[in-house]
Image 1: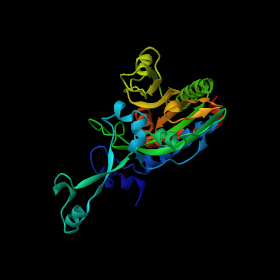
Image 2: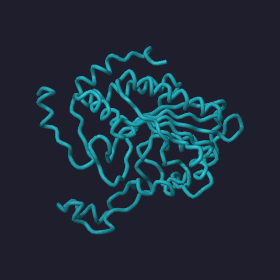
Image 3: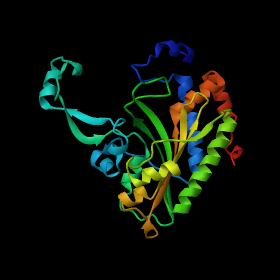
Image 4: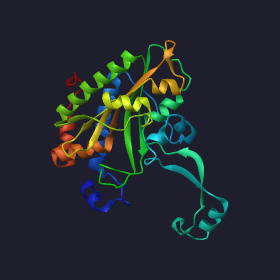
Length: 286
């Protein structure tokens, strides 16, 4: 079956759930290859994060204070429920109590798993990691590739000194804007309002004066990338040190499906978008 013939056959299985047909799937792969190239320029060493995160670990990072509306818990069926399912009942036909919590959460960002894995580490003058992971968010609504139940996020994480974190973000901004120009994307750059801190705490009040997260937005307002300065928040919570001092951290994030959306918005279809991606060479970036 040809790629063209596949397009009307492949259907999205439900709201917030998409299947990328071959053209968009290739665009996804080629874009993430460009992001991996940026990660290499930022000296991020490739790793693979966990599929689930411990709820207790996220609680120590104020995740539930900041993002209670986004969290999706991993649950398992109890023995009685398994018996009911085995005779043909559907999960939606079962009453309350049919599932039990596991103590684990689906990740809503790639960096949490990497940060939790570094607890108690001494990173010397600085550590840089990159990973792409499937992330999940409980949203108020879902819309095409802009807002999904599950999506892929490529991140480049820096843990080290305060100056090193600032340099990481400055270089990340430069590379993202340069890549956008090569891809024919016009991006906005604006502060976001979802810091990694308890919204009632002193750090959160400080972020209103000195924002710690900036988003890169497509012309329709879709945030497709961000640079995030955590100060030494995770350093304190996870006992991370850099040359003996509490470590600072920062991360650069790319929402891969959202970049596919932005490219389709800018170029009309996957074919023309792929042609533009193919024209970008590594030495085009500063």
